[in-house]
Length: 319
Image (cartoon, rainbow, N blue to C red):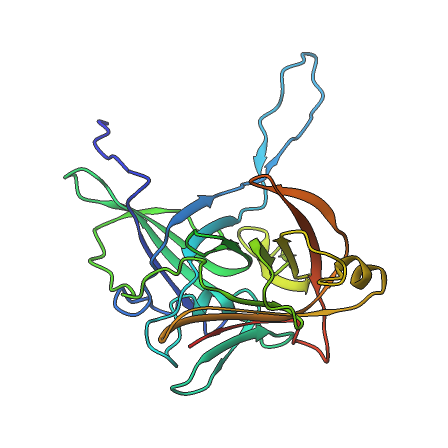
C-alpha cells in the first residue's frame, strides 16, 4: 500500500457535547458544538500485560493488551461568548470537570463546583488530511471527565488547559465532516485586571495559576470490552498560586495569614461587555518563598481554595 496522507499539527476540527447518559452519543453538530482549540493531544495508553512464562530459553513471551482508555489534553483561550448571558463554548468542558452551570438570563453565566449530578462530555476530533487523497482521521472519545488549569500571565492571552480521561474507541478514516462554526469573540490579554486579595486591590502580581485539582478515578469492569466501565470525579483539591511583588508587612501580611490559618477572598475580573471573565474564591495560602521578577523582589505564594458552606470554594463567571 502506498501512503499518501499527511497531517499537520496546526490543522484540526474539534467538537464536544455533554452526554445525556454516560458514554452515549449526543449527536454532535459542527454548527453548535465546535470548539476553537489552540492545542490538542490525544493519547491511547493501552496497557501491556507481561506474561513472564518460564521456558528453557530467556526469550520473552508475547504480551497481551489489557485495559484500554483515551487521554485528551486541550488548550483553549479563557474567554466569553461575546454576548452577556450566553454560555461560552467552554461550557460543556467546564461542566465535564465537575462545575455546574448557573445561567442568569441576559446578565451572566456562572460555573461553580458541584458534588452531585456530575456530567461527562463526548468528543469528536478530526485530524485534517493535508493532501488530496480525501479521508480525515476521526477520534471518537465518549465518557470524558477531567480537570483544568487556568494560566494568567501579565501581558499574555489567558489560557485554560483541560485534561480529560475517556473511553477507548478505535480511530477511523472518514470523509471531511464540513466546516465548523466557531465563536467570534477574541481572546483576552491579562492586562487591566481588577485583582484583589481581601481588601488589597493594588498588588502588582505578575501571574496567577488556578487548578481545579480533580481526582479522576476509573471504574474497573470485567463486562466492558475495554475493562474500564468509565471514569468519575471522586474528589477535588483546587489550588491557586500568585506571584506579587514583595511588600511591607504593614501593607500585606501574607506570612501572618499563613501562620494564623487565615483565609483570603480572591477576586479577579478582566475583559469588556460580552467578554468579561470573573474569577472568585476563598483561598488559604500555605507557604511563602522569595522570587525574582526581572530583578524585582517578589513572593511565590501557593495555596488551596477552601469551602465556606460547600461547593463554593471557587467560581467562574462570564458576562
